[in-house]
Image (cartoon, rainbow, N blue to C red):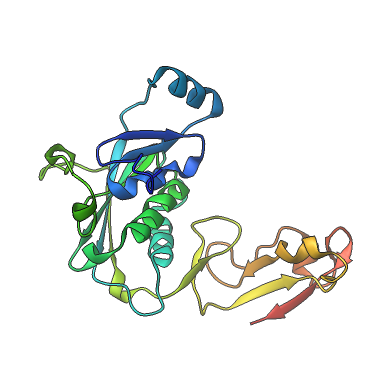
Length: 232
């Protein structure tokens, strides 16, 4: 929709996918809803939404080499927590060099706001967005706006990171020690390739595994086949 110009600054865009928050990258109020509500909106052009509270997330600086917008988004989710922005609008401000983030990178930030429970994620238009779209004056936040909570992230201090089981906000830096449970029979069962279980050695889920077998490093973890545990 963004590429086709069907999401514009100030528009309300609804979709049947929860990650419809992505449209907030260009300043649209993008939100997901169930199939029935979406069908009604498509048929009538109308829908009903409760006005959400707002959360302010400020990104400052520039991303270091090797660090991506996905890393920035994961840090945002870690700080907000998985339920920290439930039915709220996450308002993302890009300052002190962060305005250079591309439209695609802004899409990543807006996309991941739903992982904190957000109803919408809106990136305040700046940088190349001002060259690509006509942004109405009323779209910008009021100077005296009040927020349910505020978070600030220094992009220049970020490192690559990954979200590990069993919660999306269980975010660790890339070099954090992990235990990875793998499966040896990939050639016989190729569908198992994506069935990795990562058991963190630190963080909110340190040492947790889904089954006792995963903790004892040798009992069945996938349809009765033994797993192999490797330490990084």
